[in-house]
Length: 129
Image 1 (spheres, helix red, strand yellow):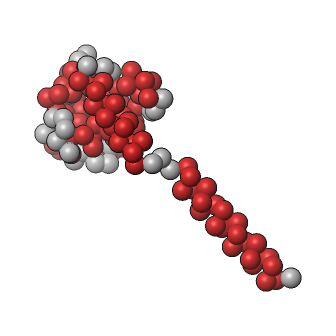
Image 2 (image 1 turned 60 degrees about the vertical axis):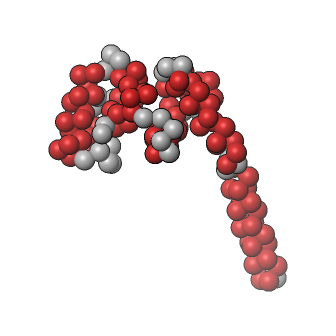
């Protein structure tokens, strides 16, 4: 019967929504991870090390760092160590940010024809003032 079919579809929709809520991380867990990122930054750990420590991707750690900077829990000077070995690329990225803006990142990446990795560009943006 059509009413039963509609009711069943509504139940499936509700189940999908609830699964989506279950898949999202609680705010407390996200906060704990940002706190762990902060702790490891203070020990001058690499983004890759911080990501591996928390079983996260490096872009998630970049997001944590952006959040910590916006909350003034860290400052660009606190993460300047992340630029080591990439100073020239970061300087070039900063020049490009001044000319092209720093968001979105894809036009910057394309400007350098892939010669500067996204990871280095994201670090450059964290350090861009």
